[in-house]
Image (cartoon, rainbow, N blue to C red):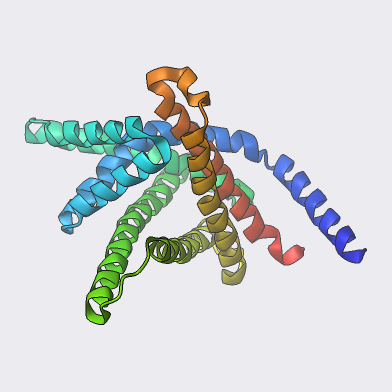
Length: 279
């Protein structure tokens, strides 16, 4: 009986906090910014990965992700974005201006994410001049964007190392690892890396107002929800005909829905990091 009362109190408090911070509205705003920042972020990831000789692997990994969860239309969209970016023939000045525009567009989402997480963690930077606040916010969000880009590339590299290691082990021990085992190991790898990244992110945006333990608890919870989201939403898109109503734009609707739920999970993880020690 006490357990039921405790669960009821936790659920009630969680619902109040969810409404207090307007998580649904903030998630919708983040999804809007993320949709417009999607193409610039993809260009930056593939360009940065190419510098470290992982460009083709990162590109194929993103194509696989889009194809698996959002269908062939999304995969074609990504291929066209990268192809058009590679085929641009402009002079140096235009190229620099274009690069700065891409970076500015990509940071739009991270600036919005920073504002939301600052409010969740009650972080205030008031007291500085308006110019200093603008510079501070842009520097903070730009730093996190760079960390995020390297994390995505590192995620692809880790998966490459995993698959290569499995192949070497199969050849050495003359044993075939089943596809289910490979997928399970890959999911565990993603879960661990994503938990560490999100835990560090919550610590970063809270400006150390939450402990490392609380940050990683929130990061782990958010990572589990993200993996569940990917698989459940992927199954829904695969077997549901609801997206067919949108015709050629169906993949954009699918991506927007995923971005909305993904943003909501990120904010929920932040709330868990902030309040887990009080439960």
